[in-house]
Length: 131
Image 1 (tube, rainbow, N blue to C red):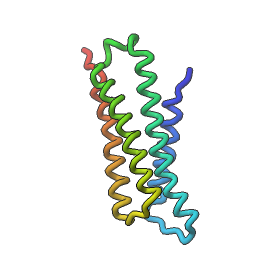
Image 2 (cartoon, rainbow, N blue to C red):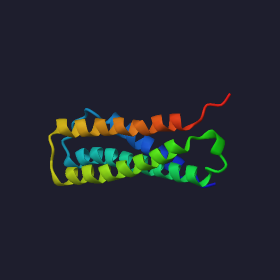
Image 3 (cartoon, rainbow, N blue to C red):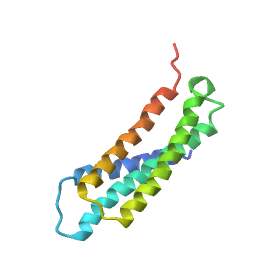
């Protein structure tokens, strides 16, 4: 079976771990500093891909799991992923062009992570309660 969303989820977790592990470290090399920033970019990329493939998988099997899920939330999740992809493109474009202050960079980064957590909340409320 093809569990692409699972593989991308594992990759996003690995890059999030690497990012958190190197937080607060100061490097004298520009290469290592840029490598640390790429951990965040790869985390975001793999997280968005994992969520997109998960929604795709849910849409493929939605007739099988019809009685267990709330369709409204699935469509909201789809809209949310499309919005996150659009926002990611804008944010990454800004970060590529401008060298923002590290405080602004951290504010963008952690607020972005907080918004991504909303997807997990949607996954929680997507499932119908059964007795």
